Image (cartoon, rainbow, N blue to C red; front, side, top):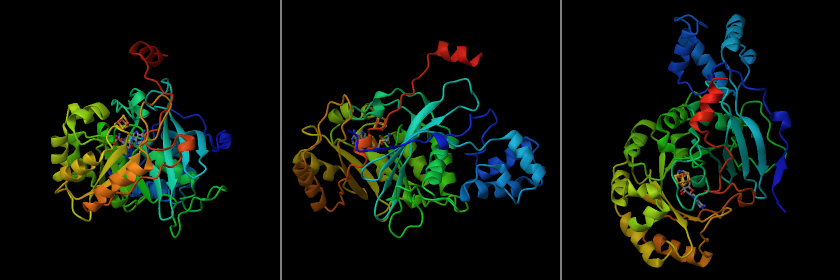
Length: 402
Ligand code: SAH
Ligand code: SF4
């Protein structure tokens, strides 16, 4: 019996998406340019209207042009004839016994509405002092980390910046985070003392964010803009399996906190667990970490380490981990392995995890053990997956000619 609560969302399902392009995901300058290029406003008015729209979209969370009361009526009409502000459709929303909430969101490609819609999962984790949204960057993943459920789903496609933001906007709407919004009635969602349900964002959902760099960058720059959603960059963490060439640009151009999925301290084992290691070895990865822009004791890199029973959890490996990270301002996050149907690994016993954490702590590293959240609804780290499949070229071409 599942203890999870399933909510029927038929009433929240939005109307069928249109072919009008979306305005979500454009930078403010891009927004101005788009309005002018589509003859919605004159060149002179572009910047002013873009600022108004930006405020409606990202501060007020409006999805209907008619509600933009400071925009002249004829402009509102042109806007709604030309563009859409659709958010993803909610296919399902599940709430775990521990309050973790998981959505399955469906997106249609506005540029190719004949193609099947794709689905991704997004997870909200309320804690006493924060509320974290775990966001997906891709449908599936090109990588095949052997302990990760998403890794068994081939990459279907990258999400656009608008779709990455769409997950945040929809979650904020559902959690009552926009002005005038109301909290869901099942409670347990508002962390103590915080006025917002979502205080932190982690790019730790489905996919490898650094294999979709431009879209992730654009989405995070919009989410963190001070005159918009205003989520502090210190509260945004991007997790990568180790796409080395994009680590430096992430710090320089996006300037968010970095997490590295390390999981092993030797190349031969990391080659198996995190196969991207065959392309960029531990040495190259750690070198990129040492020079991560903005790194300091106040801004440490988080090293994620999944605890796999008998595979990577020995005392010797804990000591080697400490040796490897010497000189890098670091936190170590130990993640008990979360099983999924068909997985071949076991979770290290808690006594083993404690011993491992102890060695790392004694060496001076903060090493919190990540409490598994939402396991009953398959919402924990590495358990996310959707049914979306990649079409063959033949099927895709056939649909596109419809
Ligand atoms: N692709 C990115 C981000 C998504 S995964 C990355 O790999 O970093 C978020 C974290 O969950 C990663 O550290 C990942 O290695 C870890 N993870 C994957 N499967 C897991 C599992 N079954 N149990 C625990 N952690 C897992
Ligand atoms: Fe992809 Fe990250 Fe899973 Fe590896 S751990 S398969 S990179 S989502």
